Image (cartoon, rainbow, N blue to C red; front, side, top):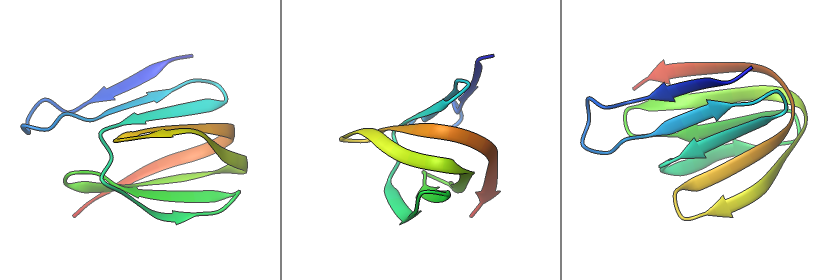
Length: 79
């Protein structure tokens, strides 16, 4: 299963692509908190909360993040 969230309303786009055991985030601003069961990320106008088991950042480049693990939930909060 593949879900893609895109934001075209702002100048800066972000992408969140969810695979069965990966999440790819493009154009994030900051990592707020990171543990093996919880990750929170700041995007342009929202915060993303990822909950899971054995979460691991497998790719980290400028504005790009690839998280591997058993993904249990993904929530968003507009700020």
